Length: 166
Image (tube, rainbow, N blue to C red; front, side, top):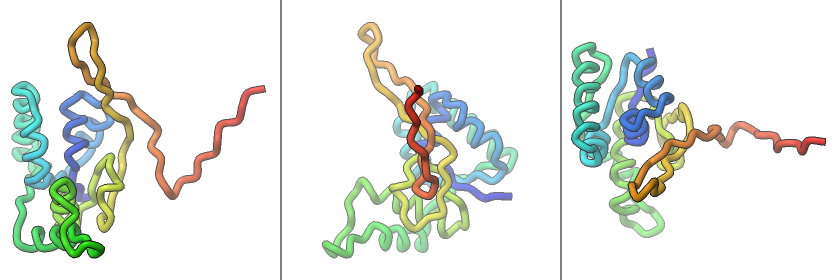
């Protein structure tokens, strides 16, 4: 059984109806979520999304497949070390601190971090289950977000350039 920690972007994708995110959650039986991830996701939800999110968490908790992992002294100390910028002698800033806490949570709980933003996490065992992006556009005067899947590109996988058709 693989213990995983789901990053914020995977939960957001799930709430947005991305099939790949749903598959990750449905095919995992030991899912952790950092308390920071919970706060990031819940704070950006519409009321309908929040109800879906809470429902998913409640079902997962009842089945014993999902848990929220709260920060503790060890997590915040490791996160501070991850966020420290040795070049300046200070932190990298507020934007990177949540990722440092999420990364420290994964390391100290022995979990693989599932994320689409692998570049945000340097010292963590990471898996990128899929790639894509949300495109914002205006449709008849209404702002709309559309999911656009992309082929995942990993540094350790060489991709041959497409050959022109003759």
